[in-house]
Image 1 (tube, helix red, strand yellow):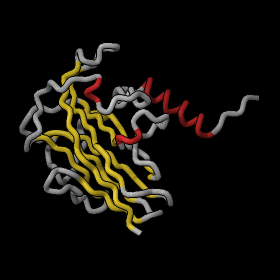
Image 2 (tube, one colour):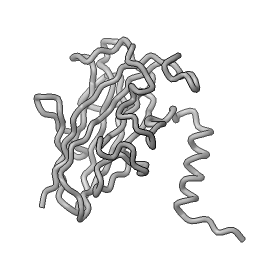
Image 3 (cartoon, one colour):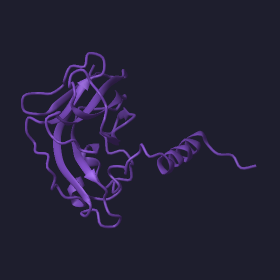
Length: 201
């Protein structure tokens, strides 16, 4: 009898979901084990969404729904060591302009690029959803009527965690990328935001 570990079973089930369900989109960071520092290494930023007042890129506290953004456009997430904090990644556009179809995002510690780790999040931090690609259509009271995606991410600084700087790399997209020709078929705009992780002792 063949014994399969719990983690292997989880990956097997995830694979079935990814291959069979229409709600899943093509995953971000397909080249996660490569040396590319951003999505633009493969894709182009040629879409109709501009980085202005009508573009929504936000990280909000999971409990209070208050934005963690600063005036310079960056974000700071503070977590007490050993404890968990849930934040919501909110991406999209205001209701006044055409909606994207899918939003993809990835939290990246550039020092992790080129390593064998599947997570490019800061080392020493436990995280459950550092990347995703999601169909637009979520709702949030803070952004009534907006064309957005909203997903929670829970993080926890472990004993070895240190303060870290991340990039939140975002793509708003419409259309379908052509296999082996990622610069064809997809209309997209690419954005980057700075995210600072701070450990509270």
